[in-house]
Image (cartoon, rainbow, N blue to C red; front, side, top):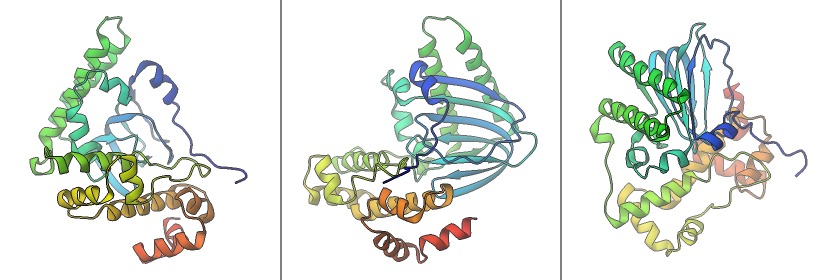
Length: 292
């Protein structure tokens, strides 16, 4: 394909690959624009102001103080709607947190999952406490303390645990049996296929058999485990995720329909159009026009 288009990469990627984390204060960021791009880091953001957050194919309008969790495997973008917008942001790579070998709260928390809750409304008392944590992180970031990385990981985990206290417990559970482990691995592998950042690197894993082969197991075994744990077949999860990515590409990129179809693994745009209309009840072009 000629003139291949790529999504913009975050400017923080190079720095994070070297250091593993970055914490900074947001001040009067009233001119933020909507950018849809792949980001190779996790993000925890405490902000006060009015904004609209686009997360996968969903949008959330917020007013007041919120705590936001961004996942590098789930596309998101941010629109600042108020002239006064302040807060703090912590960015960290997966490798940075994995170095502590204590990432269970991160991997299992509902904040970083595609079906989870990435946004929590924060009270004034909670905001003051979280502000203190972010300020301490900024101070420690500048220090030459030998165990600074361990200290920063502790702060990150403390913020996550504070957020977990606000999250209803029924939305936070773990699967310990074999079917649960297999399903978790499948869902993680599924998420790692997204977001699609270039039209010349189309989606590789498209069927239940593709995932079973990649996980080195029989497709029937994978299907039984996923259906037992989630109540939905493996194919349904794959299809829903492709549809979600298609919506995101249509709404947040200027790629034409043919480029999107190719990027999602469809040989012909007609196949993509039929697939999309069957699953959503509308065609790709109509959805794009609605988003304008």
